[in-house]
Length: 207
Image 1 (cartoon, helix red, strand yellow):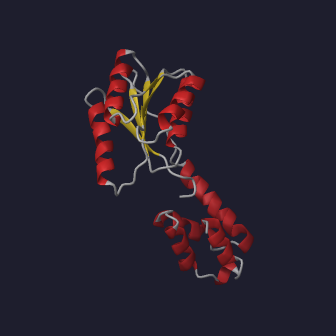
Image 2: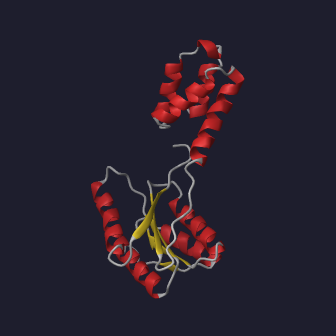
Image 3: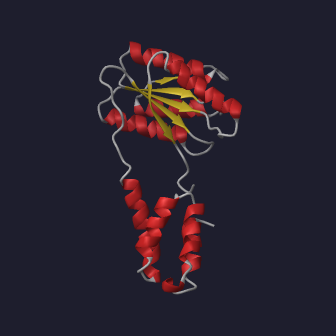
């Protein structure tokens, strides 16, 4: 059951003034909102009527997210490297393409490294995006070492004076030690050439 369905099911049965606010706070924390945000939502909603509660939750979440926005790093002397990470199926490759397109529209010279060499369609997908957007994509052979692909892209981005290098990586869980070690290797070998400026974690919007 989604967060808002749980909240609506809880508040629709009782008057808001009689609700167990601690239980509502627990629902919010279980949804991974964090204790601070959950407490803020409850405090903001104590004096509200039933019909205002969900709107109060949405408004507080929007404000919390809006306050976290910031500019993407940029270095005029060398390429800015952005590493895209996350679990399987969250839209990392599409996010990499959208970010690349955004930066291109800001008149930046952008390159993408297709370092997701596990998923069969990943390289083809990012190549298709690259062709549509007019953005070069560095890739290897099937089953290539992701770190090698990223390393080659890093060298090219410096030699050809790109503004940004976006590295698309394979999905992985933090509990898979071998895959996490591989991700560390990608970062390590790239940093032999240039620093990794940003690590962007892509997650599902319902997480």
